[in-house]
Length: 242
Length: 60
Image 1 (cartoon, rainbow over the protein chains, first blue to last red):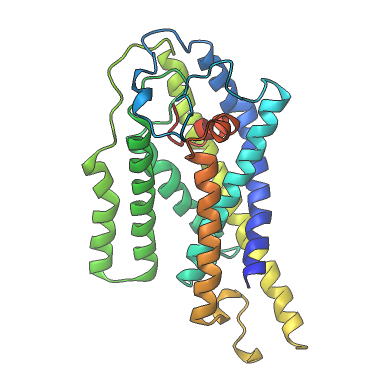
Image 2 (tube, rainbow over the protein chains, first blue to last red; image 1 turned 180 degrees about the vertical axis):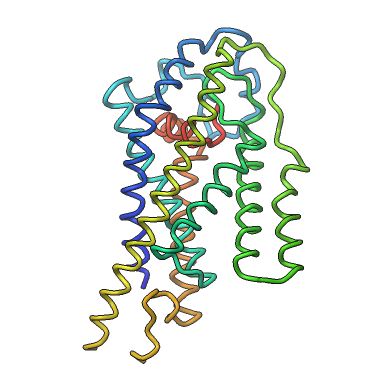
């Protein structure tokens, strides 16, 4: 069982990770590079960095010459593709786990629903409070933003799960409350600092990130569903002789 | 037993099978997500930097 789940998740992750890598390469990462040219302009001095909780001995976001980072060009792109595939595998295993734990199959026909759910929980809802940001833009404390991001994803995902599992008024009411709660609490707000990153670049980036996320989730959900159908049919015919 | 096999696969599983497979997948998935999207270690951060920005994870 775990082998089937793992295999389907892996194939879906590979497809979604490579597709998002292509979208990122042409339409998202160029905006990051453009923003990095402005990094250091304005008042972005990483002054809040001391509050970050990094691994011990790690200089927080200093990006100094002593710190390892992939070389621009092929190496940087290769690491991004690798990170995309690993992240996709993480998302695939998480929705696969939810599917198995709550008995909500991911199939060819429900794959798109899972895609919409994943997009809403992990991309759209967090972006409503924390707009996708470019390097060099002023930001609130990283740990606080990460906590809000994760809490929002969890609450939104929980809300969708409730509506999927229970067709009752109380479930719908609870789901609405759960989905709204993170936005009532509010995301950590960025300090009002000047930045050298042009507003048009930031706006293009925010919409590009959301478009890319939608593509990513559709590919992940649909290929995951298709793989599950394929494996289930194969097991079924194998089981007939068992 | 074969009569209860469904084409969707997971519906034929017992509760305990589901709990084990689901928990394992959840743990592994979260480790991968935290590693690529959240971990503060500078090697993980710098290697996954563009992914974090492009996928809307909180980054610097």
